[in-house]
Every structure is written in structure tokens, then in C-alpha cells.
Image 1 (cartoon, rainbow, N blue to C red):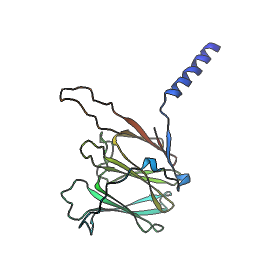
Image 2 (cartoon, rainbow, N blue to C red):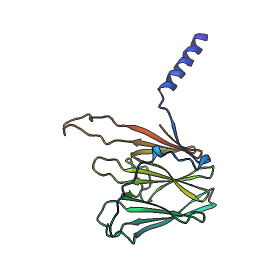
Image 3 (cartoon, rainbow, N blue to C red):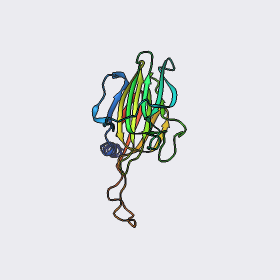
Image 4 (cartoon, rainbow, N blue to C red):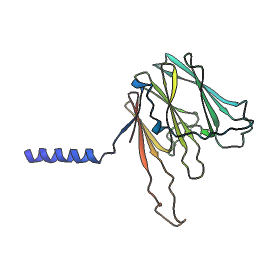
Length: 218
């Protein structure tokens, strides 16, 4: 009996050691702390003749159990109708924050996953946490072999904060018991020839997990 308990204990330790380590990306309890290592730069230059922006969508989001309202307006650069991306400008405002504006030359599409496990008729994916924080997620576009951006904003106390922006395919998402797990692939699979069955480098798989107002990456 003692040996069996020791064996189970050793196996549990080995399992824990083999589990990918989770890194805290953001905790809404410390809303002012943002980790720059999880925010890649957007693609922006001194664009010419792109204003006034063309309004594409006006919608709303809420935090704090519906008590705090955010107006979200999505725009396309003027004269960029033939360029990829459904919108290039994200504007989020509330009573406490006149306008938080983010631009990206490549832009974002209506939200999607590789397995079509999200409603692609919506411009972003919303996660409302029980602690009052709401996360809104935007999916970018694929350029050549570069994965699209996954852009995440935290909405809390009437303010929008950029907390995550990384190149990643969203292979899938699973929402269960208040936890939302995004299955990410951080690279594009490339093959030496058309006949090759194995990629040059394996898929770089990670998870972005939303739980209790926190975001973890593993």
C-alpha cells in the first residue's frame, strides 16, 4: 500500500514537471500592469490620404455585469477598399475614456478560428468575466507566411487597455465552466516540396487561457 502511494506521488510529480509552464499575461485585479513582452508592434506608417476613415461598424460591449458601457467603432482607411482586412481602425470609448484608438495597416477581419468555432458574423469575440472585467478579441489577417494578429483588450472600470497582441493562428477555442481556452499556433507550417508530408518545423502550439479576470499563456 505504501509503495503504491509512493508510485502515485512520483507519477504526479513527473506529470507536473512535463506540463507546460503557465505565464501570467494580465490580471484585471492589477489593471495598470501590462506586460510589453506580450504586445508586438502594429504595422503603421505615415499613411497618406487615409482620412476621414470610413465607418464600417458601430457596436457596444459591457463590463461589470452590464453596468459599464463601451462604444466600439470600426473603420477602414479611406481609399483602401481594395486592400485586405475588414477594418484598420479600432475605436473604443466610454464615459470615462473619450476614445482609445488603435490602427493597423494590415487590419483585422471579422472574428474567426481555423475550425470555425466562433461566430464569424461578429467583428470580435467577447468574454465577460464574473469579476467584472470583459475581454474583447480581434483576429487579424494573414500576410504571406506570417500568422495573423490576435489582439486582446481588457475593458474594466470604464477604460480599455491593450493587453495582448501576437501573431497566432486561432486553431480552436473551448469555453467551459467559466474558462475560455484558445488553442494557438504561432507559426506557419512550411514544406520543402509539394510532395513533402512533414513540415520543416513542427507546429508551435500554445494556449491563451481566460479565467477569473486573468489571462495565462502556456
